[in-house]
Length: 114
Length: 116
Image (cartoon, rainbow over all chains, first blue to last red; front, top):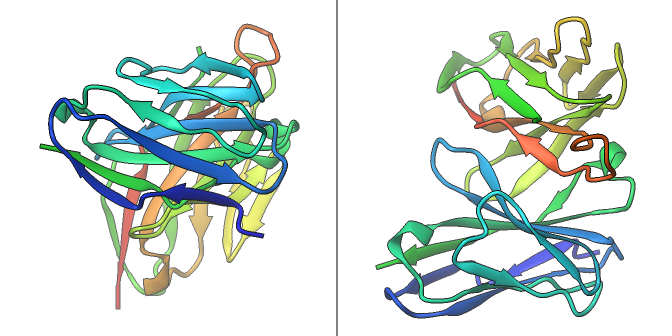
């Protein structure tokens, strides 16, 4: 199984550009999450989804949008990129019993906004 | 709200030294506790977990015991190797406000460097 796959692995954006970070999982997990990781700051939750068609904001949603049209895919959209969005982005998924099994993470997308 | 506090890094050890990384938590209800490891350039991987008080999680020589009385979940390893060099994250999963929303809450991470 591939687990959680994120693309691209690296991207450089200019201020004001937009892009979509792709995330797909093949484990039939209901729950999916987007985190950003800044140096020395741990992981902060951007958005999450508890199933197809249902999304909700996390701690730091401003500047981002998500959609969940299928169980497998959970893309993250950046509109009008800003330097503050320079970060490493991780997608994760978990089964319904997330308290017991934790999350499966993708390998991340390193984004630089210049 | 829920929170996780883990010891500040970086931690630098020699090979075969004993490792402890402290983690304490604040949570409503009865959380599940986790340690994740992030090797350079990779995503987070689940290292071990414990789902109730006094449970001991273990994997790859690492151990952590869920201590409800001290709200702690300290990570230990008796003899570290160079290959253990990574960032370690303590995390908890608990409902918010008694609901069914069990998002993971992470600590800030501790960078471990093991020298030969």
